[in-house]
Length: 305
Image (cartoon, helix red, strand yellow):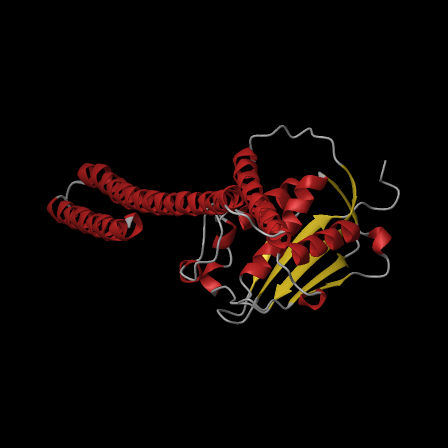
C-alpha cells in the first residue's frame, strides 16, 4: 500500500532534517570558536546560522506534513471509491437477477428495497463530497431562515432509525419542554447535514448494538446545544481534535473497516462554524464511547424578523 511505503519516507526526511540541524549547529559553534575575537563576524554569522537551522527545521516539518496530507488524501480516494463502487455493484447485481430470472413478488419487492437503500447510500456519498468541496468557496450572503431544532432533530433521529433498521430504544431523544425556544437561523439542508452526520457516525461506531442518547438544551440562554452520546468504540484522546480535519480517520478505528470517507465530522464542524457555532468531541478513550457536542446560536426572543 502507498501509506506503508510513505512511512519510511517520513523517517528519512525527519532523520535528514535532524542531521542537517546538527551539522548547522556544529558549524555555528565552530564559527563562534574561530571568530570569537571578531565582533563583526559574530554579528553576521550567528543570525545566519540561526536562520539556517530554522529553515531546515521548518522545511522538514513542511515535508512531513505534506506526506501525511497525501496519505489522508489517498485514504479518502480509496474510501470514496469503495463507497461508490459497492452500491453500484449491488444495484447492478439485483438488476441482472431481475432481468435473467423469474423471482417471486416478495423477492422482487425485497430487491427493490435493497436497491433503494443502495441508491440512498450512493447519493449520500456524492453529496458529502460535493459539500466538502463547497466549504469556503460559497458566497457568505445566503438567505437563512428560522429552524426548529427540536423538530429537525427528531426527523433526523427517525430517518436514522429507519435507515439502519434500529428499534426505537436504540436512539433516545430528549428535548426540554420549552422546545419553542430552540430555534436557530440557518440553512435547513446544512443543519440537517450536521445532525445526520453525527447520528450516522454514532451508529457506525457502536459495534452493531447502538445505545445512543440525543439531547437538546439551552446553554446560557444564548446557545443551543445538540449532544449525541454513544457507548461505542470511543476515540483515543490524541485524536479528539484531529477527527474534524478533512479526510482524517483514526488509524486504529479505520482498521475495523467501518465505511466512511473521512468527511462527515469535517462537514459537521465546518458547517457549524459557518452558522456561528462550533463542534467538539469528547471520549474517555477506546472502548468507552464518545460524545459530540454541537453548539449553535439561538434566535433570541424579539429578533426573529
